[in-house]
Length: 185
Image: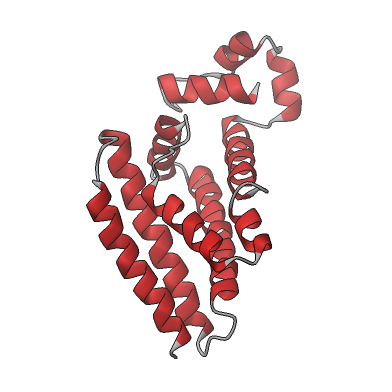
């Protein structure tokens, strides 16, 4: 059902997709969907949560952090920023972000996602720089990484070849410098 909702939202947008469409595409009765989810926003929340769990899972940031290898963490940050392997649901994410500007419940879901991702990035930075004099500065570096990645992601939705690798290298130089400055506080 989640996969059917994901495809319908990506193809027809949030407003263009009804529970009946999701039910038909998934083969699950409308009543059963409403027993499991109060509304479309709850379905979006489940999609976002599932995607985040997958993204941060053993093959993602959690694995990089668990390895204790600073280079693995930096590689994950680079992959996160470069957005070269965009999720198949890039259009869906763009749709969710657009809906967040109109729908307070979706905005809350995306804010929670962003906060959780920032906490995970901050934890990864603590692994790279175990001793930092200013925790707020570490959080700002995590937010900077997140903001840069978001911008790259949105550019890649429109043109998968932009920004070019040289721009990604430049962005990573800025991020690496910010991380390295955390050591010298």
